[in-house]
Image (cartoon, rainbow, N blue to C red; front, side, top):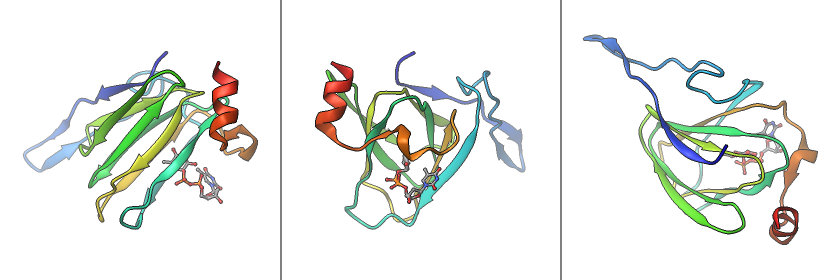
Length: 131
Ligand code: T46
């Protein structure tokens, strides 16, 4: 499974919109954890790590940011600024979130419980791990 953008169906009616996320339907894994980051200071990047096992789905539910994904061979930068679009980040992919708008709320669904040992925070160790 490789990193990619996923479009969600927009539901709702004349009162407004609604998006439903369902594990193993439009979310491509079992969901064990949801967290969100917000209030990121201007010019500050976040992430800058990879995970051994964790897969993630990132959704800018308010505002926007960019996400650069790097699998050790190829880097691609995505713009997330729509609540109906998610970015699937596979395990062993280095992710950097940057260019946050002031009002950005980036919600992340993950298929693992939090475990600091799942993180690779050293880029040269990441490259050795994926080579
Ligand atoms: C990602 C970006 C978007 C927890 O206790 N539980 C958790 O589930 C997470 C994700 C973090 N933490 C603690 C660990 C640190 O003490 O929260 C603190 C900040 O975490 P971190 O430095 O990893 O934050 P970011 O914003 O650099 O990265 C996080 C996620 O780690 C990462 O997977 O995609 O948000």
